[in-house]
Image (tube, rainbow, N blue to C red; front, side, top):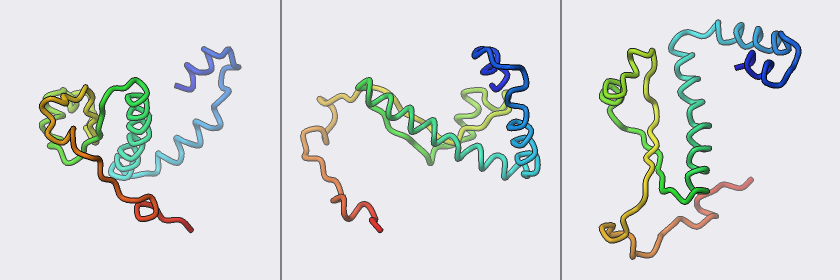
Length: 118
């Protein structure tokens, strides 16, 4: 990505070498389990951006965990690509006619109960 950014922006070749070498050193010292955990947590950045973009486009969405990773990985062929699912994002449009909750009042925790201010 850094080489592509350098080329696309017309920057001097090797512009990010110190930075990428530092990253390689740091992540090279992690165990495979630590590296996976770190990468899995990074998916929440993309997930949050995708949720916000879906809302902007007025597309209903919700994140999901607690799914059977092995089934998802098999169906999508992720294992063969050296990948593993960690989160899902459901996208679509609600069906108010079949949604029994749609006509009901939304109930949310009050802000002062839901958050902690210090």
